[in-house]
Every structure is written in structure tokens, then in C-alpha cells.
Image (cartoon, rainbow, N blue to C red; front, side):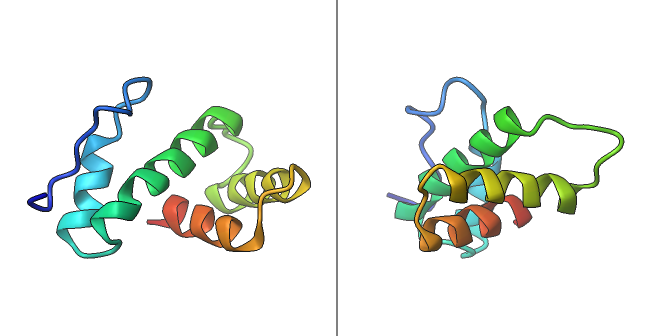
Length: 85
């Protein structure tokens, strides 16, 4: 591909701009951009914005939930990097 993310599989929540940002700035290889999009989508769906919680607290809750649901350590690290990007 040409360094531009294709959002064919990401119709529920359009994060194409985020994926393109990651790829164009060489933050992640193009083949991994879809996983980062998936993690950010899961984060946004499972830990909605809450004025009483900052991003750091919301991220901690999300990662704890991932760990309790059997997500592997390397995936949790990838999820953390995706949300922090």
C-alpha cells in the first residue's frame, strides 16, 4: 500500500484519521495500524468519557479489564501504546 490506511473494516467508529496519523508518522507499521484502531475503539466503547476520571485513570481501568479478560501481556502493552498515541 502507499502509507494510507484503508478503513474498509472499521465502519462502526471512523478512526481512519488516527490510523493514517500512525502510519504517516511511522509510529507503527501499516500492517499494525488496524490493531491500534481496534484497541482505541475498544477503549472508547468500554470506558466512556467521564468528567470525574482523567485519561490516565480511564486507561488503567481499561487495561485492568483487558488483563482480567485474558488478554495477553504483549496485547495489553499494544493497547496502552494505541490509546496513548
